[in-house]
Amino acid sequence: MSKPDFVLEEFLPYRLSVAANRVSRHFADRYGAAFGLSIPEWRTMAVLGRFGRLPAREIAARTAMDKVKVSRAVTLLMGRRLVLRKADRGDARLQWLELSAAGARMHAAIVPMARALEEELLTGLEAAEVAVLRRALASIGDRLAGQGPD
Amino acid sequence: MSKPDFVLEEFLPYRLSVAANRVSRHFADRYGAAFGLSIPEWRTMAVLGRFGRLPAREIAARTAMDKVKVSRAVTLLMGRRLVLRKADRGDARLQWLELSAAGARMHAAIVPMARALEEELLTGLEAAEVAVLRRALASIGDRLAGQGPD
DNA sequence: TGACATCGGTTTCATATGAAACTAGTTTTG
DNA sequence: CAAAACTAGTTTCATATGAAACCGATGTCA
Image (cartoon, rainbow over all chains, first blue to last red):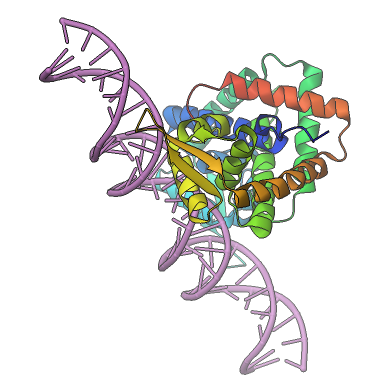
């Protein structure tokens, strides 16, 4: 009559956390070994590569990172001459960020690796299952959005 | 002719990380507010509640946490008299851990809350989708298992 | 036996994190 | 106009993390 035991291994938030942590570590290892980039740096490169030129605030919004993380990632990437910073003409608070030529070259190398890693992760799952996974992650993420970054 | 842009928002490892981080924060807030427990402490309570009595090493294995995290969580829980430690008769290295009466009472209160939180998270998803989500997370997690804890 | 590897668990130490304070510049509003 | 409120971004500080060193205790094997 008593309720079944609570089984941590079947608790979805736990499974989600374990899977995400393993993926993050694996990816950080790969990016780290190949390009010397941490995940915050990698995300910054990714959005700059796509959007071309963004203020730091936008990088934060588009990578789900807080502004402190972005600030540190950008400082580091500028130190490596992968990212350039230009002041805004009108608003002295704004700093436009963009990839340098070297940064763009690295970005071009990063993208195929990212796609390959994603592919590798999803082998064993059917296309329909991947679609459901995407939908589910979006649903879960959206439900808890709006509290803050990351 | 050129490849489509790399879109971070659609990159599965990114979506996974964002969803998992939001869930973790949300849950940590709730457990924290209701019971004053961090996630490592909560996980420890959960497996002790289920298995009754475990050495710290087993807690680590069953919660996907490293032994340092477990050691700290246990120290804290013992300080709050939620967990008791007993030496093993044969092996002086082993310490058996179990919930105290107060710990068991807290565990009994934690479980329904955990179920409710899981439920809340999954509203909007059909049962079949949840099943696929479970399968997908297991597949992804397993593929990257064996590297280390968490 | 007596080295030597191994184990359970704790401590140390260097790094990552993010909330809150801060700096500088801009907008609002009375 | 001059507070006051707000924005972009950086710095500070207290906490969380985990790799590696460590401590006893056991196990192994010559």
